[in-house]
Amino acid sequence: MKILGIDSSGLTASVAVLADEYLVGEYTVNYKKTHSQTLLPMLDEVARMTELDLHTIDAIAVAGGPGSFTGLRIGSATAKGLGLALNKPIVHVPTVAAIAYNLVGHRDLVCPLMDARRNQTYTGLYRFHGNKMETIKDQCAVGIEEITEAINQTGMQAVFLGDGVPVFQEYLCSHIKVPFLFAPPHLNRQRAGAVAALGMKYFAEGRYESADEHVPEYLRLSQAEREKMAYEEKMQ
Image 1: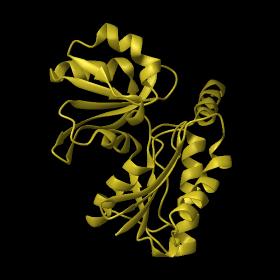
Image 2: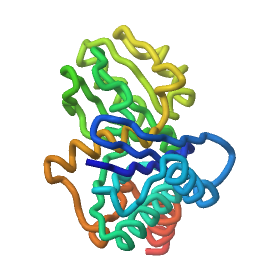
Image 3: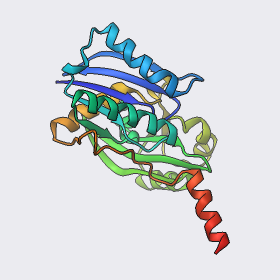
């Protein structure tokens, strides 16, 4: 089985190819360029370097949200375009679950944190039993106070990762009442390798969709939509 993984849900852009249990190649960049500039060239380079014929892949796994609205749209459009052109299914992998999967096998409670602005975070809570992932709290958009309280109530040692860690680190250090730590730099951001690995499990379970069916999961309205609603309410 061969899976192409794509993640452009946050600041990081990442592409990977997974063949059975072997990571054939991964290209990840976390730099000051838009995903519209980087994602397709990265995909071309990975395919060239690994001599990959895209027609031989079984499915395309994409980080399907939540995350940056623009980034999700770029990743989704890329996956849909490839899926339609190659007649391949799409595996919609929840972004937060994919970030947590970076730490597969970790014994602590795993809490990904994505910066959702306005003091909110895209987050969730996960545990691993060996290589099996258990969802304690499904991905959601909440205030940092809410997820902090949820962790404290578990009484379990926790590990944090994601681009929200630098944003909320001071708050966490002041309010978390259980032992905790932060994931190291090589594991604390989105990686297409994790999307592909989790996507391969989903694909084997029959959890995939056609390219036509795939849409990102935003979890909340965009800023433009929120401003429009606020304006309409004001005008009523």
